[in-house]
Amino acid sequence: MALAMTDQLRELLRRNAGVSEEMRMVAPDSVEAMRSAGLWAILTPAAWGGSEAGLREQVDSLFEVAAADSAAGWVQMVSNAHAWVVGNFPEECQREVFGESANIVIPGTLAAQGQATRRPEGWELTGRWQFASGVDHGDWLLIGAIADELPESDFPGLHLIVAKSDIDVDDTWHTLGLRGSGSKDLVADAV
Image (cartoon, rainbow, N blue to C red; front, side, top):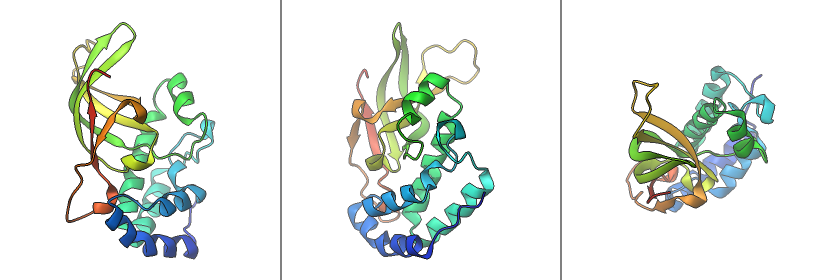
């Protein structure tokens, strides 16, 4: 399945690239146009309405998007990779994340920068995560954390999907390059 960009979408992204840089996040019009084109659902499982396309389709679409707006291309790459990761989570989790729409932006950061502590009702997160590209446009965040207990794994970290409403966004993204990616910090205090 080839996901070709239309000339209209390419021109909109190109026109909004400067707006994204000024806003320090991908322009909302660009995000919605990419949603209409199905670009946020390229790697989302078909079971939830996504394209479940291969890596080739993802890379091909990224070349097109990034050529028009590098920040939009970066956020698409990160978000779609996160959608693929969530597509490997338990079905109940996937239903909660993709149940309303497969065509969603899933920002976050996979780097295990915070701490996850096992509690009877789940995991409690505390810490700060840098560079959550696209955070202004997602309802869910995929974030990495160092876990206090993971006996079945040699790697001390895990990746958790968290409702953005449970996390504070700290607007630290004041950069010279790729400002439009909106890669702000995430902060959690016993979430």
